[in-house]
Length: 431
Image 1 (cartoon, rainbow, N blue to C red):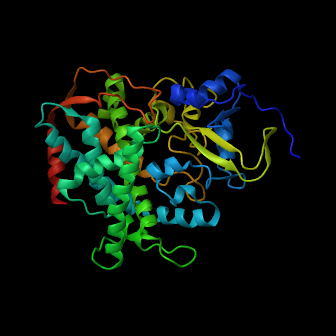
Image 2 (image 1 turned 45 degrees about the vertical axis):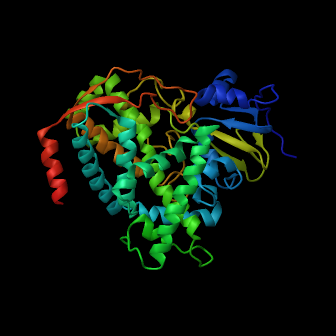
Image 3 (image 1 turned 30 degrees about the vertical axis):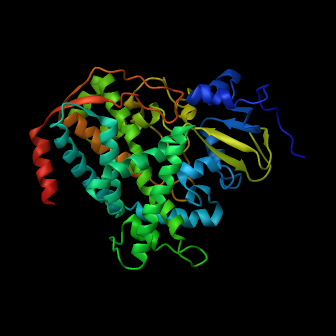
């Protein structure tokens, strides 16, 4: 029988209500209180092991130790992820499906994404100058929906854009939701899967011909290990796994605007410096502000980690937010400081805003490159090409709501596009 050191344990029947009350701080509170990167608790009636930090993440992404298939709750699959998608696969099946996603994230594809993003952000900004004020969160959803669909080869008509943007955003916003917020996510899941599954059928019977290098074409024609095409509804889940995370960048966009508002010196440096600094700013936004709180996996087979016993079938939660603020990994982790990424060692296990591990072989999000690219374009636009004022509002955000954002959505008045932006937009249109 596997024996190990005693895991620090909460003496409680169940901590589900504490999780709802503490939100992003639930796991960090426990590891801090126990002065340990591992704590055992109980959630929804079952024993849970919570882990945090770089070495914890390294162990968590060891596929010999953990499986994902039974770890993601059905309520999350039925709203956020969809069923039978890449997130719940393991072993060769996961590697094969992940390879499909990696084939979408080519250098040429990301360059095309960058061009689309620049054009659409500038077009949106031009429209913002005509409004008395805008709510950046709402405008970002719509602009990102346009970007995502064009990049993925998904046809999108202008009169449906705001509705599709809302549906895709509702999928993400359902993560920590209960009641109406979760039900909106469930409804949006059915609507978006029906929409995209129909597009998959149109591609397969020749009624729709997206470019061969787009996600819609690649996924519609993807052959599984058994030699069969994906079922249309499963293929729809995977196409949504491309466009949904792109729309979800709206959370980071709003936090990016908040960062420049609260740190004027960062905005000044962005105006003057090249893309190296803008990437550092983007990475710090993703590290500092809360997005995904945790990820789960189940123990594949009994093993020891740092002297602690992990038994087969146990659910383990990796603390994403806590790892990104871990004092052993980050100097002054609760300060916003893009310069910390100047000498970052680029470990796939210490900086995990969208999960960790390796891109090619592991479970790290294949869309992370796209997230950084889209955010860089926006942050440079905001700093270098727009003249704007931030409206009086409450810009605080809840650490209990998951996912969170400033409740005001960041209200701003866009006064002008600078001459450089106008000429660049004209060039974008000609191209």
